[in-house]
Length: 124
Image 1 (cartoon, rainbow, N blue to C red):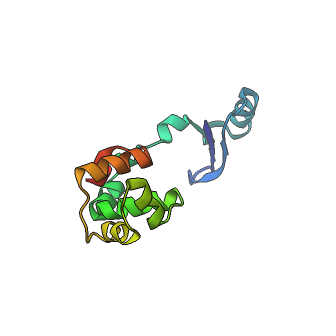
Image 2: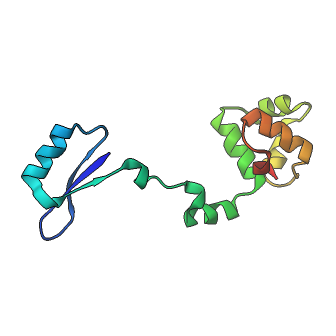
Image 3: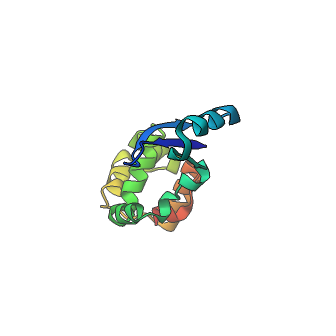
């Protein structure tokens, strides 16, 4: 839960209380600040990032090779290590994929999907 205490007349936030807020604290805030407190359920604040314009704009600029590099780096793998996990791929092959000089086959996309435990569509 989020409790936002707002400044009178300006309606700008004065301070916020986040997390599990005991009912006694909420009651106290209402007594002291009256109508200048707003309670917001944290679930209402959450937004699915894949549904935002920002995500759609960024996604349109990211290549499958960029996706491979991002996932590889997140797992702390070198290009050579990823090549071995894929089976008989050299470091240069992985570099070529990441720099969009080599396309990703459906078979390779399936292997990447397994390695990174994400949907295969991320690499196609």
